[in-house]
Image (cartoon, rainbow, N blue to C red; front, side, top):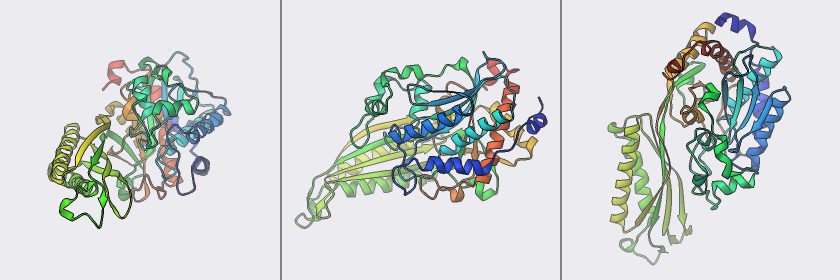
Length: 432
């Protein structure tokens, strides 16, 4: 089947329907200031039920695995063929926008709708996925559902991850009706999947600045996340002279500035270092902070530079604390290496862009994604759509419905182009 035939066989994505779906998901939120739908909460499960209910209404088979990932499948003409997948995640960070992750899910839902309505034939099953727990906001580790699917997390790991209230990941899963002892059943088998393509908002400003409607991701940044616990000495702000203090806050401030200084050094070109959360105790304006906790996120497309940045910052933090009379404990929250996505898959998406006259830009992703994890099991590709002003993880996050429709059209045509091509490819060719 030629790309021209594919293009003629498919309707276009409906921008208004995409906007309506995004609005529906945005209503499933804690509060009205942006979207708050944390991992492994009843709200996240409500969003997953909306996903499966709407796709079941199209006649697709739906199910949820032991990790909380949800699926819908449209069978192919070759029932034993491995599936081609698409989707993203449904959870959010606190006070997020309505597009991160959800844009890829509603794009998948729209593709499912017009495959069914146009009765498009395809050889491979096409599987639509909503991952659980992609954001690391609650438990400090990103991509929980896809890590489990990729075999990177086991039951024993879930008890170690805790949120700020002391609730473990295992406890949170049980609270929403999942059985964490069975998560190995959620692991994907390589022979059950042929390829996966995730649509996502860029979460940066490159596409908008260049006026390009879509991006094709070549590699995904790695991330190292850790917690620094600083133990100083709380005391009265008026009664304690400056030279007698062991102020955990001033040590934390110096460490934060050190992170910025390291990341902006020319030796670390491309590194992003962030202290995204700071907790102080006892939290009184008249008491010197005796305890400080910093949550640090290091990202880079270069694995060696990513880890060397983390090491340099930790060594510097130790020196700062020693000089200030503050003790330091360090806890690793997560570590993921950068991932280069398969070149053959990227080329196929680019060929679809060329055939349909869609301008594109090849670019890396600074953020972590579920595709980064499942690429260990199945060849994964990513399509980016523009983010207005490059904003993400804030209520102001925005992608136009028109841009999302363009990306959805590319997604649909890429899936069907892969369906045609994969039948002729050897496993060795797919690994390149």
